[in-house]
Structures are given as structure tokens and as C-alpha cells.
Length: 329
Image (cartoon, rainbow, N blue to C red; front, top):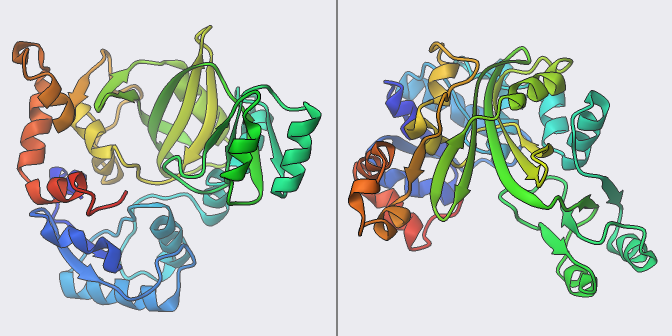
């Protein structure tokens, strides 16, 4: 929403009751739908989208999370306004599935952790008992986001981990010793127009230049020829090698931080000029919490972080509601 406003456009938001906190923002108007926004793309949702397109004279329709993105992909040919670039339904479903994404990596020759899929907890337990799995691994659901359901399984402690798994099938993925890294890209027909690599630690967003990410993503997307914004979770091992973990074929939670760091992915979808590699040098954007921790040495705070503070204070109510737990990601 803030990226839309920063691109010079008026933002309007349509969502179910759980999204009604958007009505507190100074940067959008909110309309409520009683239709299911669950990825299926029901007729009731289509009617509400088109009703608000007409009411608000909408020029472009964007989706904000995985269920709304899949819903819009299903409905886009009947939406009464153009839609932001997105992959087709087959590509979205493939990339949004951690198992299928891993298979794509293997087929494309892109490094990814060793992974196995188990249809049920008992089958996973049998493999753990047999000792046939890596000593340290991550158990994951196929499609949940935001780390939900991801459980570390360590030597001697697998029974506790197994008791916390409430889903099936179960993805068992080798744990890569190293550091987390994220990469966000904007693609047209599988070609990467812009890429931002970054880390998020201690409420601080830092960009970094990792040149091989662009080539690896294009290797993955060569046959899919996808359009849109994609966010990747990666691990960089102790030797510096990259391992692709999963893909989110949609807008992502820290898009506003990317904008404050130098690239607005919404603008790219509106036709703004892109660069193959956006950052020539690292940039740091501190959240409000990180700024408070750095208050004793304000002269060390980066310009982008001061911009982030002004960004937050320009629309304080949503930030406050999130801070006290009234809003969920």
C-alpha cells in the first residue's frame, strides 16, 4: 500500500473483516468483502472486485498475499481492470509448493538442500528412527508462509519436534549451517529486471550485493517465463555457497523496507525503469525498534533509517496497532 502511494498512485484496499485495520491508514481507502479470499477465486469475490473497480475508478488491481494473489490469478481474465504482473496459475502453484520448488531447483542445476517428502507423521517418524535422515533438518509444511509450522529437528530431540507437527505431508529438509539471506526480484518473461538481496537481523534490514543470485534465478525461470515479484529464502553456508530454500511468488512483508533501501517493486510493475542489479553498495534501514536501540549514538544512524522513521510517523496508527498485536502478518 505504501509502495503504491510512493509510486505516485492513490491506493484503495479491498479485503475481508480481518483486514479492516487498513481503514486506519492515511494512505488508502478500505472496502470490505464478505467473499472468501482463500486462493480459489470465487464468483462473489469477482463481483466485489469489479464493483469496487467501478466505484473507485481503479486503473490497476494488485494482490497483497498468497491467497489473494492466487485468487486474482484465477479471476484476472474477468476483472474489469488490468492486473499487476503475476505468474500464471501453474507457475504460481509450482513455486508456492516447497517440494515442487525444490524439484525445480534440482532440475535446473540450482543448489538446494537435500529434501524428502513424507505423506504422514508416522512415515516421518519411521525415517527418524532408522537414522536415514540428516542429523539436523527442518520439518516444514508445503505451503504455509512466514515460517509457520517450520520446526528444527536436532539429534536426540526428534520426539519433541514430532509432537509439534500438525500437518501432512511433511517436508524434511537438510539444515544448512550458515546464515539466512533473502532475495527479491522483479521479472518479465523469466528475465530478471531488478534484484535486491538483503538480511534482516535485530529489526534491521541490510541490503547486500550477491551477483550470482540474478543468474541463478534466471536459470530457474528460463522455462517458466514468469512475470511479477518473487521473494526467495536462501542460506549461505560457511563456504559462501548459496542454497535456495523456497520461493514466495507474490508481494512480501518487507517490500516497504526494500523501497526505503532504494527500489520500489510496485513502481517496476507500473513500468518504471529497472536495473539488473539495484544496489552497488550495501544499505541499512533500521525499524523503529532498532532506531530506539541506536538512540545513544544517533550520528551513526544511516540516512535510510531516518527515512524509515519519517515513513513510520507519516502513518502511525497501523504501526501502533501492529506493535500491540492487533494486526497479524
